[in-house]
Image 1 (tube, helix red, strand yellow):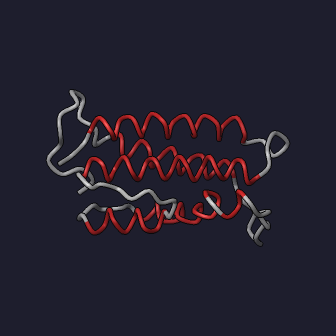
Image 2 (tube, one colour):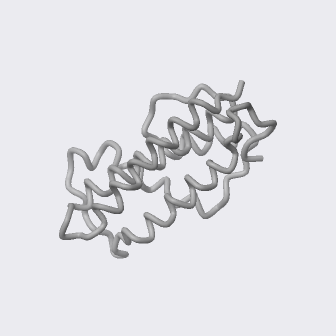
Length: 139
């Protein structure tokens, strides 16, 4: 059964992480691991909100690929533009304890903020204004 109240709570918490990301966006303000952690958390909470709207009891994991796969298994249409966000998974666990090594393509904090914002806005569209369940969120 869809749980719009849980989804709304998760989205509110995800938006707090998004605000932290904006504050941490300048490289001089925070290291990439701290920024990335909040990015991973925002995406994780957004995906779990989407799952709650699908009526799925989501697992307590930081694996963004697994959460995306669960959504697809429920018949949700996951726009391709959200696929790259799964690369943030390591910021939820590994890079909390290890140093991030910059890949050949630099990590674009502004682009990550934009992608996370789009995901959260996408999921928020499925929230019913009155708190009742929707018929088929994300399909």
